[in-house]
Image 1 (cartoon, protein in one colour):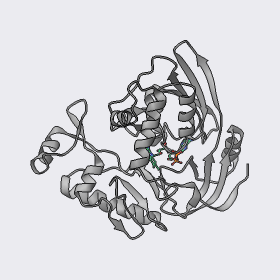
Image 2 (cartoon, rainbow, N blue to C red; image 1 turned 120 degrees about the vertical axis):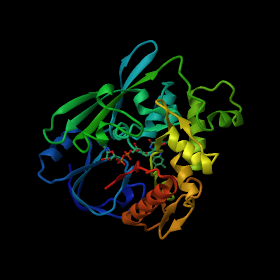
Image 3 (cartoon, helix red, strand yellow; image 1 turned 45 degrees about the horizontal axis):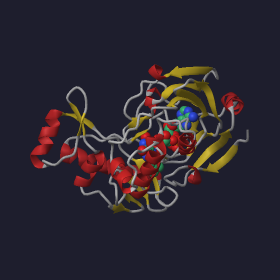
Image 4 (cartoon, rainbow, N blue to C red; image 1 turned 120 degrees about the horizontal axis):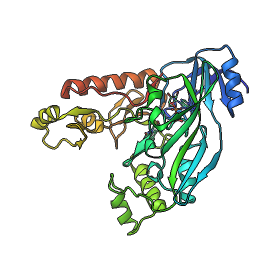
Amino acid sequence: MQIHQNYSLKELNTFGIGVKAEYFAELQNIQDLQEAIRNPIRPLLLMGGGSNLLFTNDVKGLVLKVSISGIKVVRESNNRVWVEVGAGVNWHQLVLWAVQHNYGGIENLSLIPGTVGAAPVQNIGAYGVELKDVFVKLKAVDLTTGKLKTFFNSDCAFGYRDSIFKKAAKGKFCITSVVLSLSKTNHRLKLSYGDIRKILEQNKVSQPDIADISKAVIQIRSSKLPDPAKIGNCGSFFKNPETDQTKLREIQVHFPNVPFYELPKNKVKIPAGWLIEQCGWKGKRVGNTGSYEKQALVLVNHGGATGEEVSQLAQDIIASVQQKFGIRLEPEVNII
Ligand SMILES: Cc1cc2nc3c(=O)[nH]c(=O)nc-3n(C[C@H](O)[C@H](O)[C@H](O)COP(=O)(O)OP(=O)(O)OC[C@H]3O[C@@H](n4cnc5c(N)ncnc54)[C@H](O)[C@@H]3O)c2cc1C
């Protein structure tokens, strides 16, 4: 494993922020990871595809890019297959692999950037499916002791864009592989979320299979979200806030058409993009950063933005949503 000094991270984060790591190494396997743990350089920062990280400064210590590869079927029955996947595998490549093999369960998660190892960290989700729905277990190495530990689904405290790896276990483990349980037959298709049905109709598909759904999701996402290769971004910058019925009714007095989703226990989720749009931020440019013209929830780098600039914009958005609606937005992106 080669350790580089003063290494540029600009091409390694989808925001395209031009910062440097004091030290940087790429991990191809667990031996590399063990070597990095034995090395005294600290702190350690793990990264995969850099699609959920906002760097506000040069990074002190050792940045480890996890590039452990491999997709392997480890268990199989008539109906299901367990697939163990290296943490460095690109998530969308895994989805395409699964669709090609007619393994169902992750087709709605097509085109989410990043790696398989980061997927459990925020329990990635889209179009009515979350990673936790197919997640069996993962292997991770304790960054203090170097010991391997298995986390089963119930150990991960999965929630909406949340897991133990963002809370109690934050920065403590390097996830090295993930096992998913996928269907081989009788796939449970999820069509009711977003525009999936509409796009299937447009594509003249009346009896969709998982490949049709993957294709529809790719079409929808490509039309709505900016391609990080063209315009720097990390997807949704904020989580959709959860609130109670009382707050919803308060908002409905002035905004009778406020969109919301009912949740258990009398809670509701209000789209953060809508709240931000009502505060006048959609498509607004501030210096080299701004809110994306087609989706207010996505903050973008128009070119040359610093992480500080993006972070300041995020704080200004949080303040204006708080002032107008009394709701505090929480970033989904990891701000470093
Ligand atoms: C255009 C766009 C659209 C997006 N759409 C969605 C979406 O629909 N749904 C969604 O959920 N997310 C979405 N995201 C966010 C992002 O794709 C996910 O959060 C993804 O899982 C991040 O993967 P990554 O490898 O890039 O992680 P990174 O950004 O590199 O890291 C994210 C976090 O995980 C930690 N980490 C990374 N690898 C490991 C590891 N092996 N072990 C332990 N910790 C690790 C890092 O330290 C960091 O805290 C989108 C992003 C973009 C740019």
